[in-house]
Length: 225
Image (cartoon, rainbow, N blue to C red; front, side, top):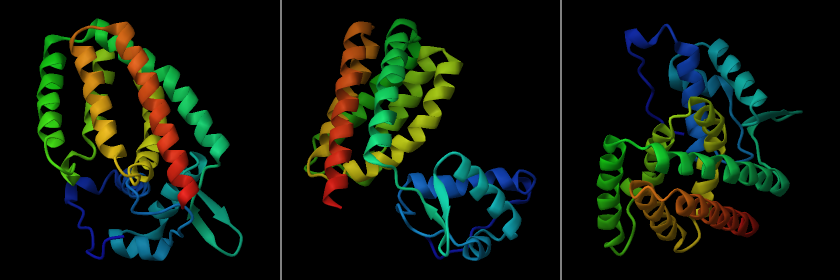
């Protein structure tokens, strides 16, 4: 984790427990905390300039969601999902996300389509380079945010949000495989283009293929750890 202390602004103090929760969860999702790594309350409290109470509350909340677990004589550690759990999450996500993509292709506004076209141009520029740089690493999450909004189904988006947090962590590991990051960007470009074109059946099929490829990449990377 970074050494520089976090400075909270005055207007951020009231929802401090929520901000501490989001900070820790993002640290897990981004890979700052690895699977099996300890999370020490005292160190986090010093780092975030808060008491240990909101740290405990955040860790309790994250444990209820499966992001961390408490082990005897070790304390709180980042959870490591079993292969069976990973397959289950990807299976559920394939159904929900393909539905969201299909709905987006049918309901996307002109504003959604224009934003997706802009991102497609960014992807084309990134793919033209020998290496996909760090700035473009999470462009697919931006695409998903736009597409889920275009689907105009708040309940479906809410269900996807929880699963997406797990997937963000999975993607970081899967990207360690040579060529996977570039391939994933190509797949997301195709998804964005299909939504722009209103091709509902095509984008539904492409989504399932993309998630199957992502699952395979993650499982392969997991075996190499």
